[in-house]
Image (cartoon, rainbow, N blue to C red):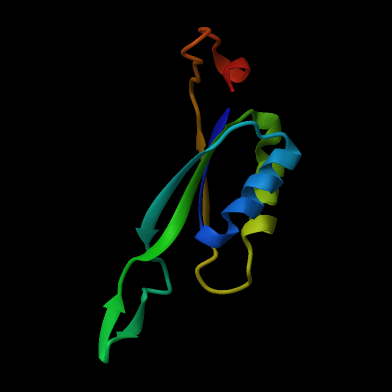
Length: 112
């Protein structure tokens, strides 16, 4: 099992959710986060004053998937989240040692 964490632009979230559903990913956790990468934020003008926006709004999508779904899930996220502009995001894949469904006690892939 793997835990896939994707940091994406918030307006691409619905597209990513639909793409993951199409490849068979059943559930996900989404968190509104702020951060920056290479784009290092930007400056904006508000009421005549210029200020720097250091942290940009992002969506953090976390999905636990069986090993056989990992590549299809990554491809789905990449295709749905890509705009071709700076700040499209990152995907991280981590080994998931154990998963347990609290309600039934199921463990491993069946808990996903």
